[in-house]
Image (cartoon, rainbow, N blue to C red; front, side):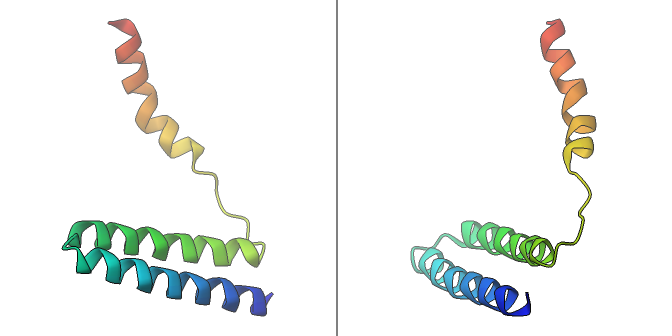
Length: 76
């Protein structure tokens, strides 16, 4: 599993380096920052999933955030 994690993180590092350099070359600094953040989070979550760590579900926080918005929209 350690080998898989090293390959996964190595691939993400190379891919993110190439993409961030591209974004910076065309003066898209905000996009480069968002992309770097997303790749960082996904590499951490992906590594934990490779090691079969049980992660909490993200459904409940999104339900708490978006359910009142949906009910307001449906009432109108």
